[in-house]
Length: 69
Length: 244
Image (cartoon, rainbow over all chains, first blue to last red; front, side, top):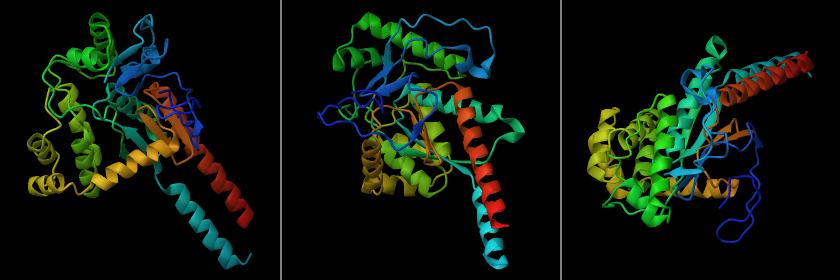
């Protein structure tokens, strides 16, 4: 399975329909798919995502590509 | 256009501009990024301060792992390693990582206490709560119960307790769960998600026009909400001008 809007095939082999929405913010954000949670590189941990949004927080390497559901 | 028609149109346009911005969220209680995304959405809204428009949020069902048993004996690590075939050491690393991200969003995840379970009943309860105007409260309560408190959100008794904690009638909640009163509504949400091509959660739809996929930063949510509000204001101004 792939992220929504990717246009790639889903498990049953049928093409994924294009969502009737304009996608904002891009697709590179942590998302859970089929029981596994994916963290695109550098998308999970920027200072802006931190509580309060204070700058200065270090951006960790995006070594962990997936997480648990 | 007559003056009467113009006045009516202006009133209708103003009414449309004043209505809350609708945010539909596809989410699963067992989705760690959904809870984090919820916090980011809330932070984004809060960052708009006095300019924050009124929003109307509705949660929709998404079953992340339908093959999950109601009762699973073992830890989250056991489940992911056994069911998904992920290496145990990598799972440990991943859980630590998401726990850290959650902490920075103000959430206290406890994967050691977490009880992995099927979330279908929890979704039915969320629809019951929606029918009684308590869906947002229950959503927050279920997330906290699952990720922070190690509660079992797959059993009716526990779900009824949680429902009562957010002000729902316990007997009515139990009856709704036992009769699967909202099972069709859950399936409708799942079918809508498929029709929209939603394959991962959280997935946010704003006013039926814009989508935000995943636990995006708070600033993305703030920008999206502000954009919808600005577009509405522009449409209102355009329509009002045309009606004169």
